[in-house]
Length: 200
Image 1 (tube, rainbow, N blue to C red):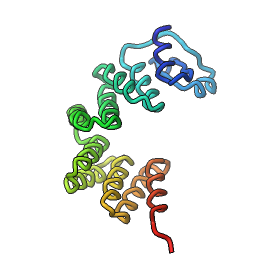
Image 2 (cartoon, rainbow, N blue to C red):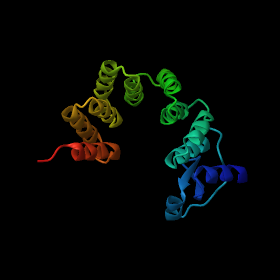
Image 3 (cartoon, rainbow, N blue to C red):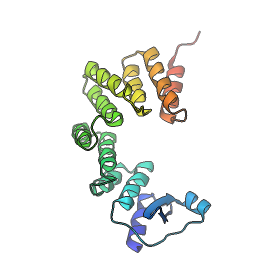
Image 4 (cartoon, one colour):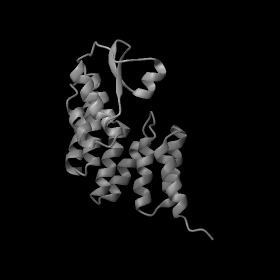
């Protein structure tokens, strides 16, 4: 238990992170949430990747992408495996390792085919390679999938904005907010489009 807790605390960039039992699994929650719930560090860690998954989440949230990548890769296949592969791919993209990220996203599709989140991430990477038409086509397809996720129209909006198609980009970010009104990346993208608009 002690070693696991030390790993969690290191991943939180020095902030204390508490572990508690939730629904029969070990889970990691922030100290603020733990304090609010009256939780504390408890034994009973499971071997199904819960700890590694949350270590990766905390590392990502604190900007430690290499550690998040490492912890995501340590999650075994199973219930959490596909999401861990998705996070690992996203960390590779954040680290600028686009070729590896693209292969990792494609591998994630073998675990969850036709996932709009994965497909829209691939579209962004394709756009970075300069294949804009293909990227837009893929991003539009991902954004049209059901059930809808806000990430897909949001990423389509990013690609369109980079082309200077601000009206279409704005519509895409608004579509993301129609799926999830609290999706902050789309709100921020709309603010940036508004601030870039020439005012009379």
